[in-house]
Length: 121
Image 1 (cartoon, rainbow, N blue to C red):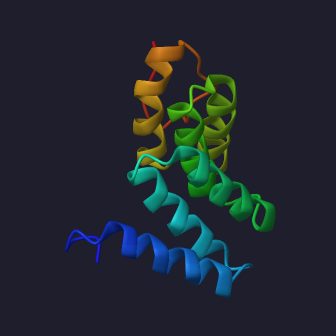
Image 2: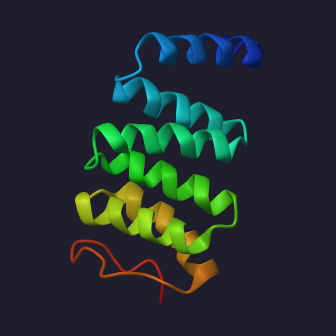
Image 3: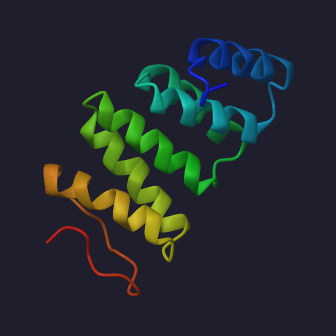
């Protein structure tokens, strides 16, 4: 549906699926990703928070929540979430790469993985 330009219909179906499976962390996470893609960071953050309430060590959800906070201008909260994602998966190059542009904007960074270059200098 998304590829056919039916984004609102796709969002409606995803919302219904989340209501049918309220404890499915993957469903909430995926819905959050789609909401973030549609520039709806507050709603996306709520999905990622629900995901983390049920699975607090889900690194990709911390990463998604960090991006949602970043888009809302909540830079301290974004830093905490992006850092948590890297802490949980220090060898994930995606988390290191996504943190780079953010760090250059905020000039903050926590200890990076020794396997990848520090994204903020």
